[in-house]
Image (cartoon, rainbow, N blue to C red):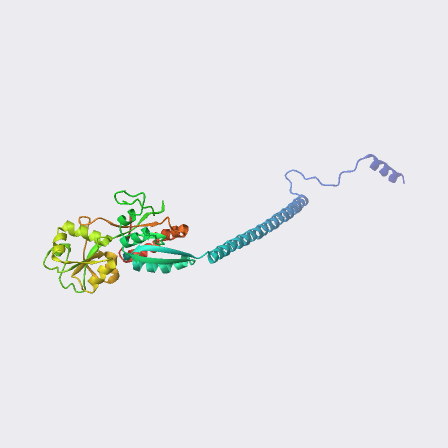
Length: 336
């Protein structure tokens, strides 16, 4: 009993040693290592969870963005479809318009082709053409014919209707050209054409002054092709002699001259390159600047037109690449 009491008294007065082991520096402690491993695993689990949450949030954001973009695209597509439908409806509902176009006879084939093309561009517009010599067309306009667009084969006839032209040309002070619409549309060439087989063996303009020629077909002096022809023969010094000898036959426009040559009613004829091409005639020579002036086709909307906007649109259409391809196919070139 005494011994037990002594032990209790001793133990009570002496502090017990801390049973938790302390890591001694430099000494491997497996328990501490295990604790560190467990702690790292916990941290790794927490990081993985955080990253997974971030990815999930990003995915939701991406899907939301995709959904928003898809909605925007759908709205844009719907708006575009609505606009197209409205434009189509507007074209369908456009009021019908008739344009009267007075054009030089040498443009018959090309403008007839373009007439069909324009039906697709402006289905509500009906094109009505009046083909004749530029001089005849100018007179018809002056006398009150219903005309929206005038296309001449020479500057002279257009100038006679333009108040801004030289008064020496527009001697009557006529005012028919709508301001700001006149353009130089095309250029043509004046050529010497012969019938099939060239029976008189005429090779150039100089041959017109030889015994090879019995009869030459020309346009009247009041039409452009006739004026160019007169200029050529004057420069060759043979006009007066041929007229005196009865070696010249006249046509009221270039188509009549072309027909005379095609039917071999004349040994040769002076016409435009485009008409020779369209008629399949043989061209033996082309007039240079030493024989006649440049052949320019001016075009303009007239101020007497009741459909000026539609006329402006068609005149602009004539200057497009599609139309120029049609013109160039028969020998025209774009005027510079």
